Image (cartoon, rainbow, N blue to C red; front, top):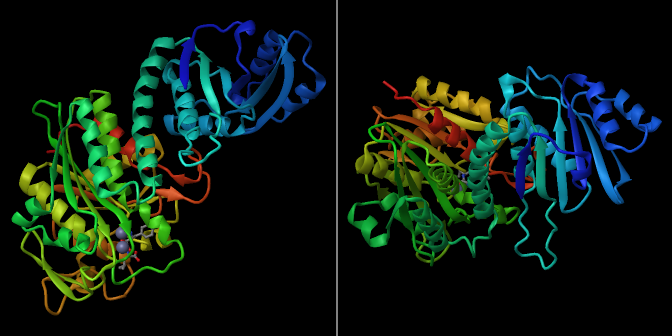
Length: 492
Ligand code: BES
Ligand code: ZN
Ligand code: ZN
């Protein structure tokens, strides 16, 4: 999709779709633009459409202009004062959704030309770019791209171009996550995850891969136990992007279950196929580092992902088994379906030992319980640091990826006490499944490190279309981390 920002677009140069975006219910702006574009008086029916120009109202009609059929879309965009990157990206998604023309060449005119919000056009086009993404790799009949080109009329061409170049790099990271999550588990295998991570080398990222032997040597038995029932090998992958001179090191850790059958504590057949998406936390780490590195953001970020397949076989881990984690804590594996926390236990401990980061943020499709609590709107946030949470909330507000903080309170600890080991991997069935999962992880995090765990089990994918994505994978997390890292100033 090509995107250009132009100072003026002559009526003769408009594309197959013309979008008129009116903020502040400015009907005269629309009327003037239509008069410029149309070789005739505005038809009365169009004037009627303008009467109905409320917030997020879209009206469209088609006509022959310069000998070809054009779609004209009129959008009421609400208040300029309350417009933000998040609201404008959403608006872009909404516009994209309402385009009926295929392979559209879109020309956008808007009356949002304020010095306070110079890059409104970049935000709108970014939203359109995200919303237009589809996955049709396995379809014989490929979907025609909805939008092939966008040109926006704006007084701030340079600012918009610069901003859109960044947003586009971030969106590339988002769509990497969507693609990886959507690929089936027979394609997005642990070996393929290694290839995806190695692809970051093109952006100057150092990628290292620990295999079973390497992990056995350092005692990563919690992670290895999860993968022992699978024919596919397990890996721990690290990605180092060190472009921040002496600035603090931020570690991103991800759960990378390429498939989660539940293991011997097997899941029900219904919707088990969705568990191909259980590697999304790891994909978010890859996508975020790709976004940051391709923009050459000045930061030190390391990614650590545990890549494992949880399967059923004669070699699979049994409920009741005890494993010794890399930290030397013993874990009773009460339920083999609570495997993400076992993988993360070793990945988190390894991250601290190897890199001593100032901050750790982990992403994981960790619990079904988070969907019960929050539905598909908010991801669950768990943290030992109010300061880190405040920064994450700031980024969350900016990009519109919503977070809700849960208590990480020691009073739930009793639930994960084991009779025969230091800790067990599931709660005693007294509810709060997402909290006990997070508390389990806390055992493998140094209290001096500022840590946030983000449970993305319910936001990673949705069976309904969302503002910025079609049904399926969303890529939640990349835009959040991109903004967080860019805004990051040392934590003291
Ligand atoms: N991968 C699942 C969590 C999940 C559920 C992700 C639904 C996406 C959608 C995780 O490994 C799991 O199975 N968790 C169990 C934990 C339970 C056994 C304590 C769950 O949530 O049921
Ligand atoms: Zn599971
Ligand atoms: Zn899982």
